[in-house]
Length: 149
Image 1 (cartoon, rainbow, N blue to C red):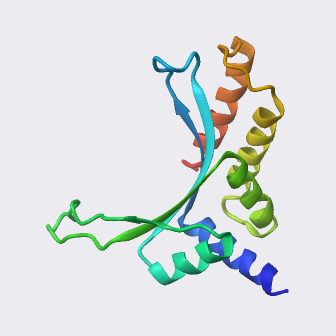
Image 2 (image 1 turned 180 degrees about the vertical axis):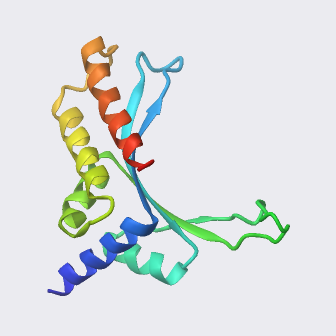
Image 3 (image 1 turned 90 degrees about the vertical axis):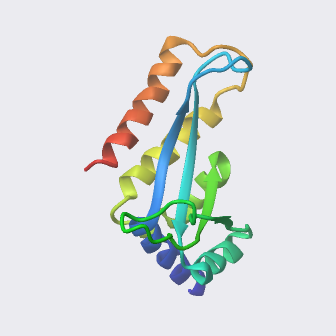
């Protein structure tokens, strides 16, 4: 029961502060094709909350120093902490909190579906076909559109 309460707590935080996305990177000299990666990000200034979540996930939150950026009134921003999960680790996390998500449930569901689709395909060092790219791009666009609703 305690674990389910924790998952509901984290889902609530992810609904408010989290980000579910599919990142799209253009090819470079080492890559033959556009690269799509599913990722989850949670960033906030509350260190105790981030440490609590990270300890349950067995990861270390990344300290982000936002002091170099100023607010409009020239006051420095307070430090922030970030947790980022990619691909399989992100998919495992989504599976845990999906039943408890409300506002970002569809984004999370699409990200999970996308990750399951691409992880089931053979990973070859080749250029993706137009059909494979179109499917990936469709997921990318659908998740991106949900962020603007």
